[in-house]
Structures are given as C-alpha cells and as structure tokens.
Image (cartoon, rainbow, N blue to C red; front, side, top):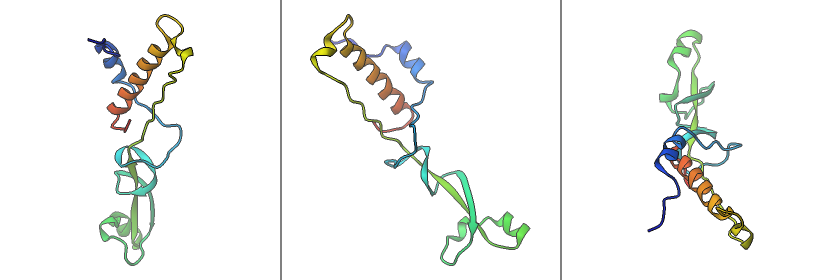
Length: 122
C-alpha cells in the first residue's frame, strides 16, 4: 500500500490557503473568482443607462427615484479558474533523498488540493 502524499495536518493547513491566478482569464464556469466580463454575479461592477431591450430586473430603482432616469446595475461574473499541474519526470528528478520527483509530486498534490478547496478545476 502506498503512502499518502499529504498528511492530515498538512491538509488542514492547506485548507486556509487559496490559489490566486496572476491575471484574470477566461474561466471554465461558475466559481468564486471575479471574471473578466460582466454577467450575473453578485459583486456590483458598474452602472449604465437603460437601453430598450435591457432586462428590467436589472434596473436600479433607488437610482431612478433619485435621478428620475433608468440605470442598470452591472455585476461581475464569477468564474472558476483552471489549474494545470505538470511534473518533470526526467532522470534528473531522481536526485536527492527524498528525490526531487517526490517533492514535486507532493507540491503538485498540495497545489491541486488548494485549488479544489477553492472550487477551481484541476
């Protein structure tokens, strides 16, 4: 039977971490991160003037009461990130005790676990 890559104590510590992408990209679906485009999220992004054909459910009625003009609330669409984990399996990774390959496997497992805990795809 093989030994687990991550022990329970390390997993509890990783649970407090989140993988943060360096820049917004195109997500794969609904998630917890603000995406690069506006959509049906919960975080307010901006306002714009109402135009015919817009969804009346997005009208900010409090702004209308103050300004007597229709404005739409625009929200940031939250998206899941995709994390790709690649490990170098060349002969040079066998060096050391424990080997660099073992360290890389544990690091990839920890990063993947943190990403999955943040509802991202791995």
